[in-house]
Image (cartoon, rainbow, N blue to C red; front, side, top):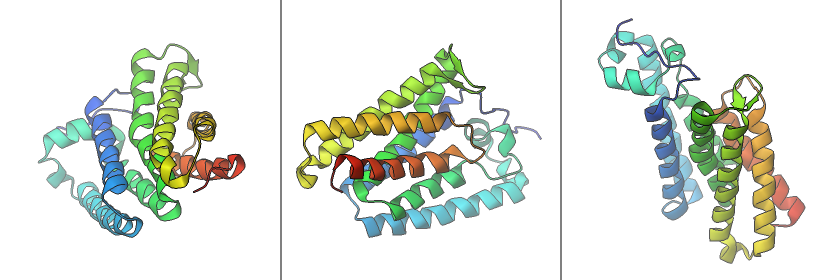
Length: 216
């Protein structure tokens, strides 16, 4: 197909990764500062419906998708020509996280998906020399670990006055969440990581908060 996307999972595809990053950060910031839990669910639920409908149109009417060559080239992979793109599990991962977890935990998961996931891929593709399995590298995993640590720390630090959390438990929680999420990210699951990463990160954060004694 003319102008069909040619990128694969091993392609750097910076435009796609930066788009996903900006979308996730945007959702997180709007939820953090402007929306209540209920408002965020309604709005993101509506957006999920729109994304799903647009994806169905794109897949089933490729002649229409061919008219937006730039989007095809920079935002889609070759494997997504005839099936739904990662945009569907991405928005569903965000929505399910919002529905299932407290706000502070959801923010950690959203920012992890938005920042840690693409950052680890970019670092792994460009600088990954020490391979861990077929598609992972030590450098990419370390990028995921440190970014997730900082995300967890700053989100809980920002919330600390409201939750009355001391600095020590926040540091311990951040370290344990980053370690657990980094290990999970290495598992070669067949499920889309846009769905699994935020749900696992949120779930393990809730569990660790209970263990450490961090209130939610």
